Structures are given as C-alpha cells and as structure tokens.
Image (cartoon, rainbow, N blue to C red):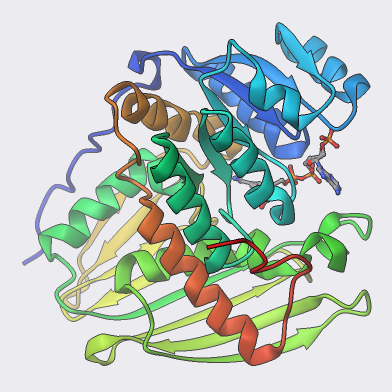
Length: 347
Ligand SMILES: NC(=O)c1ccc[n+]([C@@H]2O[C@H](COP(=O)([O-])OP(=O)(O)OC[C@H]3O[C@@H](n4cnc5c(N)ncnc54)[C@H](OP(=O)(O)O)[C@@H]3O)[C@@H](O)[C@H]2O)c1
C-alpha cells in the first residue's frame, strides 16, 4: 500500500536565515545567477566582489549594487567586511581560491565540483578544519525543498531496498564555452556529470566497482562519459554525461517497493513521482525552476550553519563531496582523463 500523502518539505523560508556578508570570488556566469537569486529571495548581503580585473569587479559591483570591488582574489580574501567567500571561478581554481579565503580566516562556499579531484577536496576540508572556518561545496540541488522530501522518502524506507539509480545529464554549449578548454578542466564530467554522480553517491554511497567508456571531442576534452557502477549489496548505478546536446536530465531511483522518478532537470526545482508496482502513483508537483528560483536555498542553509557555529552544512557534508570526487576520479582514470593542476596540493 503506498503511503499518502508525501511528506512536506522542512526547508525554512530563505528570508528567515540570518544575514552573512558574502564576497564573490570570480564574477562570471554562476556568480551573477547566485547574486540575483540571493538578493531577490534572502537577506544575504553581497558585500564585496573580487576579480582578476578591477574593471570587471567594478562592473559587477555596479550591476548588483555591491559596495566593495577588488582587483584581485587576494584583496577580496583580506577584505574586512566579508564573512564568507563564494568561490565561483572555473573548476581548476576552486582549490587555490578556497585556500586563499581559508588562510585569511574566511568561511568558504565553493562552487561544484569542490576541487578537481579528491586530493583537492580532502585538502580543502583539512585546511578549513585546521583554520576553524566553515567550508562547503555549493551542490545547490541538495538544498532545494524537493530534495528534502526525497531525503525523507529515502530515510523512511518507502522505496524498500534501492537496487538501481539511473541518472544522466547532457547540455548544448557554444563552442567558445570553457567546457571545450582542456586548460580549464573541460569536458562534461566536472560541469554536468557532478550532478548525477552526486545523486548516485548520495543514495548508494561509494561504488565498489566502476566501468567507464569515453568519447573524445576534437578540442581534446572528453565529450561523453558513460559509466556503470556496482555498490555494496549488489545495487547498480548507470550514468551518462556529455556536451553534445540537451537531454531530459532525468534521474530514477529504483527500489524493491517503489520507484522514484525525478522530472528533468532533476538537479533543479521541479516535480517527481513515486510509482508503486500496483500502478498507483504519488506525485509531488512544483513549478519547474532554475538558478534564480533555487540558489538562495544553499546560501540560506549555509548562513544558518555558519551562524550556529557549525563547520559544515548537513545537506552537503565535506565527506559527501569527497566521496563524489573519489567516484569521479575512479571513472576518469579508467579513461585516462587528466586535468591540469590536479592532485598537486599538499595533503
Ligand atoms: N551551481 C550551478 O548551477 C553552476 C552552474 C554553472 C557553473 N557552475 C560552476 O561554477 C564555476 C564557474 O562557472 P561559470 O560558468 O560561472 O564560469 P565562467 O563564467 O566561465 O568563469 C567564472 C569566472 O572565473 C574567473 N576566472 C578565474 N580564472 C579564470 C581563467 N583562467 N579563465 C576564465 N575565467 C577565470 C573569471 O572572473 P575574473 O577573471 O573576473 O576574476 C570568470 O568570470 C564552475 O566550476 C562550474 O562548475 C555551477
């Protein structure tokens, strides 16, 4: 018998979260989306912005009403009126940018993926712990109200034994996008593949075996990665990620008692359905949304954790981020995918 109704989301209104003073490090595409979302839906204050170019940080500050603009990441890290740095550079600068903030005594929220590899992820976790500051990966999907309902369903055992997770993510990119640049850790794995991989490792933990196939792009980056993984108890996950064109970006979690099918794009606000073998269904409906509707939840959750003196945020622990990076490493090593600057951090 299906349980009814679905649990309610327990995520508080982002407007109720205490305000932190945020410094943006790397004012690019996602930094704009983050700023728009938190300014519209929360009390978080974008207090400063740091760019490699003073002209770019001033332009960003002017667009979003940010009071302080700096012409280097070092100056932003040292800025007096900043509680937390949001690292929004391309992937291969996440580690060095996070360390700048941590060593200046700032809390840090690092865009996904938290680093290029598990070595960098572990190093950020260790340095933040040693410095006594908060650190987290901005895996925004896990902070959405719908994901809180999904968590409750999983924790209640409604699916029975989870046997299979199927998750995929493909998008179309202009040829000028950094995803085609080998020097910027291009390829779909770290941009898009982190979402299916984060979901798979969140639900099933660390894989015991992985098998990956790759296809290459003329630019030299990986163009497509397909993988099968096996977990303790024999459950499986199948994932695909590529830079060829848009896919539904759907995810399905199959259990012995029920199947949970997330509408695509599964990493963004939107609906999902619980399907039972007798044909009955329980549907969670919410408007499909994107970054504007969703990014403020992670900022609000981080603000609550920091204000309560926590060193991590429960929705995305550093161990969980490290586990995802370990799985990503295992997959790409099978294909010989290397990123410039990976694993070179002291541990
Ligand atoms: N959460 C999400 O939904 C989401 C969505 C998209 C991207 N992301 C993540 O956010 C990160 C940034 O992505 P994005 O698309 O916003 O990137 P982007 O616009 O291409 O670049 C972000 C900024 O990084 C700075 N940067 C530092 N070194 C750079 C270099 N060598 N080349 C180019 N830029 C450099 C630049 O700012 P200055 O030079 O002015 O300092 C640039 O504006 C990625 O790691 C990505 O995975 C997350």
